[in-house]
Amino acid sequence: MNPLVALTRDRAALAGAVLFACILAAAVFAPALAPYDPLAVRMSERLELPTARHLLGTDELGRDVLSRIIFGARASLGVGVIAVAIAGIAGTGLGLMAGYYGGFPGTLIMRGVDGLLAFPAIILAMALIATLGPSLVNAAIAIGIVFIPSFARLAQASALSLKEREFVEAARASGATDQYLLARVLLPNHLSPLLVQVSVSFANAILTEAALSFLGLGVLPPTPSWGAMLDTGRKYLDQTPWYSVAAGGAIMVAVLGLNLLGDGLRDALDPRLRGRRQRMEAPVAPREISAQT
Amino acid sequence: MTAYVARRLLQLLPVVLLVSAIVFFVFRIIPGDAAVARLGEAADPESVARLRRTMGLDRPVYVQYLVWLGRAVRGDLGESQVNRQGVFSLVIEKFPATLELAGLGIGLSLMLSVPVGILSALRRGTLLDHFTRLAAMIGFCVPRYWLAVLLILFFAVQWRLFPPAGHIPFGEQPLANLRFVALPALSVALTLAAVQMRFLRSSLLDIIAQEYIRTAHAKGLAHRAVVLHHALKNALIPFVTVVGLEFGNLLGGLVVVEQIFSWPGVGWLMVQSIIHRDYAVVQGAVLLIATGFVTINLLVDVAYAALDPRIRYS
Image 1 (cartoon, rainbow over the protein chains, first blue to last red):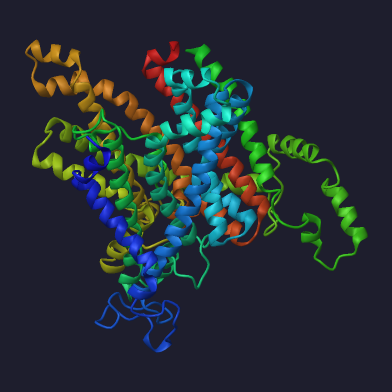
Image 2 (image 1 turned 90 degrees about the vertical axis):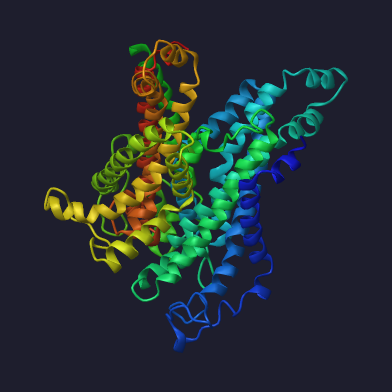
C-alpha cells in the first residue's frame, strides 16, 4: 500500500493532521482570523471573563486573549520550524557523515554528540540563552542545537546499515563520489525515519519554546506567545482562569496533533508496522521520555 | 560485574571532561569582556588590563579552561555576583529540594502506573484497557507546566486544599512540607505515570507473546499466575531503566515546575541567576546538573546490568 493511502486510512493520524492544520491555519491567517489586534491595550477592559465580545476574555492589559492565542501560533510554529531546520540539517549531515566515513572523524562527531546528550535538553538550552540573551530567534537557535543529537544518532544508524547494502556498493563501484553517495543515495533512503523524527521534534520544540517563554527566556513581550501567556495568566487564576488555561490548551493541541501525526507517519512509512495497531504498544524511546519539560 | 562497573566508570571520565569543556566554552560566548563588565564601561584601560591579568583573561583559552577545570575539580566554581556566596555550596544547598520533589514525583507515579499498567495488560482490549490507554495518551501530551497550572486552579484557588506555592524544609515542619510538595509532586507524577504505564503495558504484552509464556500456559497455569510470576519479572527489567532515565531527566524537567510553585530547587536557582545575570552561578549549576545527569544515567546502566546478566557479557 502507498504510504499516503495508509496514512489517510489511519483515523488517529488524520485527527492529528487536522489538529495541526488548525494551528498552521491560525499562524498563517492570523490577521484575518483574530477578532482584535493582539497588541491593542484597553485598560478599561482588563481581566474580563469570557463574553460574546471576547470569547476567551481579556488579559491584564485588556488585550483579547483569543486574538493573542491565534497570533501566538506564529511564535510557536516559527521557533519550531527554525529549530527543527537547524537540528535536522546539522544533525542529519553530521550523522550521515559519521556513519559513512566511520573511523576517526566518525568517532569525533559522535563523541561531540554524546557530549550534547549529557545535558538535560532544557538545561543546555537555558545555558545557551543565558549567554546569547533571550529572544525568539535565540530560543530557536538554542533549541535547534539541543536537538542535533537525536537527528545525528538516527542518521548515523541509517548510514551504518545502508552503506553495507548492495545498491550502495553498486553505486560506489560505478564511480560515484562520496558527496554523491551521501546526498543522492544515503539521504533519500534516510527520509522515512527523518520525517518521523521531524514531526516528533517539532512537537518537542513547541513544548520547549513554551517552557522557555514561560521562564521569560524565549519570546519577549509584547509579542504573543503561549508559554508567556501561561505564565502571566497564572497570576490571575482567581480572576480569569481562562487566560492561562486557554494558552496551555493551545500548546497541548499542537503537541497532540504532531504526536498523533508522527505516530501515523511511523506506521505508514514502515511496512512492517502497517496494519498492526502498534501505536500504544510501541516502546517509548528514551528521548521521548525527556520530551516533557 | 566489577569489571563492568570499572569499565563504565572509566567511560564516564571523558564524558564529564567533554561536558566541562562545553560548559566552559558556552559561557565564553557572552558578548563583551568580563573585566569590562565587572568594572563598568567607564573604567580606565590600565585597571581593566590589571583585572584581566588577575582574572587570567590574558592567557590562551585552553590555559584558562585548564585553570577553571582544576578549580572546579576542587569544588571551587567561583562566587555569586549577587551575594558573594561560593557557587558550589549555593548550588549544592538547593539539591535536596529538587531531589525531594523528584523522588516523591517518581514514587507517586509508580504507585499509579505499576498496578494500572499490569491491569491494562491483563485485561487487554477491555473497556478498562481502552480507558487507561486514552488517559495515558492524554497524560503523555499534556505539558507538565499546564497540568501544574490546572492543579493550582482547582486544588489551591477553587477548593483551597493545598497552598499554591512555597516551601518549608521537611526537617523543620514535616507536615507543612508535605502540604507544599503535594501539588508540584502530583504534576510530576501524573505526567510520568502516563509514560511508565504505556511502557510497562507494552513490554508486558511483548513478553506475553513469547514462547516460554505459551509453555507456562500449556502447563495449565492460571493466566494471572503466568503474568505475575513469569512475565512481570522480565518486563520490570527495562521498566527499571525507564524509571531511572526519568529520574535523571527530572533534573532538567523540574525547572519549570519549581518556578511555578516557587520551589527553591536547582532549577529555580538557575532561572533566578539567569534573570540576575549571575553567570558564575548559572555556569556552576549547569555543570553540576549535567554531572548529576550523567552519573544517574551511569547508575541506571549499572542497575540494568545487575538485573540482566546478558548486558554485562555483550
